[in-house]
Image (cartoon, rainbow over all chains, first blue to last red; front, side, top):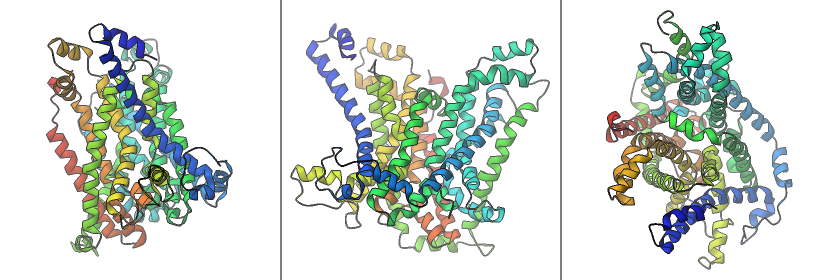
Length: 285
Length: 283
């Protein structure tokens, strides 16, 4: 570990024992916080894989005994689970597509042009942050019934796009700012039209960041509970489904549902971990 | 670049403006009208109905208490995480990834995770039992134990919501130039002085956006509460949900929505004013 290298530099000025005890304190703090994050996930996974009997074992050891995939598969076979999983994927897919299609052009405009109304536009985008956006699903129920969007994944995808779009616009602005203007101008000089220059020069360079933004839009939609529950009855997303059946489900089903919600997002966060801090550095400005 | 075709940027922002107008501004106005009207005429009847409801005062108190407890703890843990990770060389990436995992976890899932720990035959009771603290299974999540339920919900919220604060703060810390710290060290500032006088003022913008984001989210707390305590712990958004879905009374639900929006806006304005960011003092 890096303990030796780091403490070697510190021992030059301080007594060795003092420096090493500080290192020890630092690493135990880090380990404790890692455990604080990871242990609860491990425990809910045990609950999800332990089945009905597992819930009533007393006292529990916290060791992975008596677990198998069977209870989780049984949960997947419960009526409505797979369908709501697919609905969640669908709503998240719509959210990703719409928030990038609508947000990225706006981000490009913010990054490359000076125009009247730019500040007002930015204000509109930032203003959405001060509002609990999901709550705006409440009045939409009526208009969505009229438009035939109530209880559809398109309707859920639309309201989730309201959550993801401001974020996408701000983040893509930062990403396009990171692509040197000179490259684009060089492409024009060599005879590309603006559109060609964008797709041949800017887009490939901005792509990884845009993919990361898309992943975030996905996670935002995947995790949203309130709007999805208000706007659906039969075509529930996974969160909405779990929320409505919560009070009548046995414990191990609840844990299995929790695990099922957690797994995809953890994988996605892992996939974009390099971009996390850059993105939030940008979007929190 | 803007001279010859000035309409280009407008064309680019137009789709998103139209979208936000339709699905952000219109429902906003609709909510306010729904809340403040009765049979098509302006009226405070819905607001009255909300205020006189048995759960109203409790839900306001619970939501505020949760926010007041949860947000400062999250900021403190996130600052500690930022300070720790800044001293780490190798392994930094892995540690940060682990700490950001809850960022991808929904409030519903967080509630279910802590339910597995805190339910009667759960791991927390098992731990207390094996330590000899309790003789038989204790219940923490019932309406008879409001304080324990409150702590459980707060813990679940802190567990889930700290990651986003940490990411924003670490992103802010990454932008602080090393020279500031070194200069302070040369002039003899200790670690605490450095933290309070140098680091904290420099990450003010990050701190501000973390506070705004987290506070607005904290007033939206709902699914975590529902997963852990069911109806035993009324909160504002939960009440809005019940009025809408159970009672089918969209107007009272809308009044709750307006109330939550006013609180969120007020909190945002307070943060913007209290933590005024002076552009000239930024690195």
